[in-house]
Image (tube, rainbow, N blue to C red; front, side, top):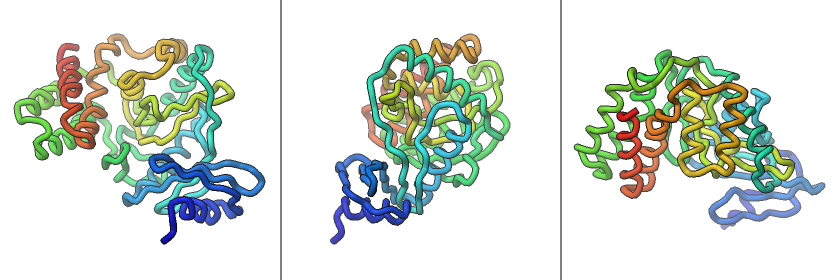
Amino acid sequence: MVNRDEEAGRAAARLTGRRVAAVRAPSASPAEVTLEGGEVVMVKRADAPGAVRAEAAGLRWLREADAVPVPAVLGHDERWLVTERVPTGQPDGTGAVRFGRALAALHAAGAPAFGAPPPGGPAQAYIGAAPMRNTPAADWPAWYAEHRVLPYLRAAVDAGTLRHEEGALIEQVCARLPDLAGPAEPPARLHGDLWNGNVLWGADGDVRLIDPAAHGGHRETDLAMLRLFGCPRLERVLAGYAEAAPPADGWRGRIGLHQLFPLLVHVVLFGRGYADQALAAARAALAG
């Protein structure tokens, strides 16, 4: 039987066309593969259909914006993805402000529609291990309800993870979305899964973004995700963002609305432990 180190090494050699000198493959992380000559690359495996293609297309789309640095895709097939490795450092205030400005520029690069997948990316994508459908639409409130909130709400209720009366509360949010969404904005180019674990503070002081669930969406969704699980130097990040492109008035009151989607994804993936947070986000959204 071929072990994980051997699999990752063979994939790196095949997809880069270079010999492999060493492999370090932690059980729960992408493998670090040292190529001949000393370059270290990251090698990630995903077995879900279309997952690698979606991630590779997302990384390229974000990189094309020339805003927040993103590791280059060095090769991929339907199961394996090889990218640059990011040497990491410590968060600092100056880098946080730069990240905020760069994130604003990434969002401003835009997308053809809400729900538009990256060029070359499949409509059936993923956020973490959860399927995520990218279906283009012109109206953000209706699209957000139909394609980001309700699919995960139904899955959670059907599984018994959320009770029917709890689901009714979240359905109220969906019904009121046109009034809760704030001023209309054009589709932004979103990372789409912008929690702290996907924000790498580089050794050179610049942030890199990894593991996107990229699509066209509302820029406040990325900002809400940064706050959801705690991003270092967040207020400095937001200060840099506001210098470049101030969010619409009242955006902090809409954080719960935008966090509802990732929290429901967590309810579906990880169970009842996230239900209270999802319901709190729904109540916060209704309260404005």
